[in-house]
Amino acid sequence: MNKSTAFLLIISIIAISFAAIFVKWSEAPATILSMYRMYIASLFLLPFVWLKRHDFKNIKKQEWVLFVFSGVFLGMHFALWFGSLKLTTVASSTIILALQPVVALAGGFLIYKERISVPQLITISLSIVGVVIIGLGDLGRSSSSALLGNLLSFLSVIAVVVYLLIGQRVVKRVSHWLYSFIVFFVAGISLHVFNAVSGIPVRGYGAEEWQIFMLLAILPTIAHVIYNHLLNFINTSTISMTILGEPVGATILAFFILGEEVVALQIIGGIIVLLGVGLFLIQQQKAYQL
View (spheres, one colour):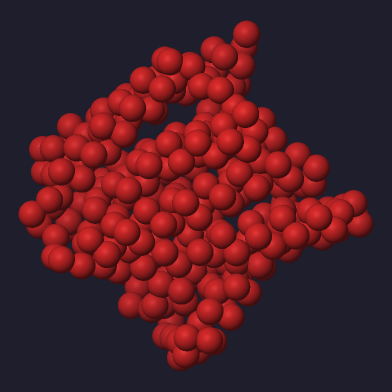
């Protein structure tokens, strides 16, 4: 892993940490937030898609099918995770994200026969322990709805890992700009269909909500564009590992912006997570240099 890849991963952690804050600000349903985030992000990508428009003819039929599935699972991820944030605190929701590297490793092994070294397994375990400590610091301060919120967060982990595993296969054969645009737009459409079937109104949201839709489409979504680009060079497990930094970033932002309390256990857990992620990236950099 070169320095530019590591730098992009750090930028993605910072960007994606803002997502939980923006969702907490909004009063719109989770699926509405997710839908407009994807639609607006697709619009922002149009200039890049125009430059790569000739590549559309190189996409095969089976790849289009994979793109659609990838977009549907991305939409599911956002809807489930945003729904989780509506039910519990930022720390409680993001704690379940610690399972993402484990799910990604299992998927990578089953689908791509990827192996993992003992030192890498140790650093992943270290970071997971850190995130669990963050969650323990939040126990006793949440309502009963936190259980449902945690379940939704876990389901969102499965959905995003499927999305990344599909991307790992197809993004090497098509521009990441085209891939990002297609899956974002498909995610928006799938969420639009869900909202229509469920009777959730897609209109009537005020200026403040539209500002939040825009913020979600710009800042946190940058991370997903970066991930799609980096899938050309690194695997899903590495990306999932760095996402463990999100609970730390989100908890810090929630303290300063939302005024959510941060206790000693969350501080200790955050330090452990950052240590684990840092050691993992160092190991990955050494592995790619061999």
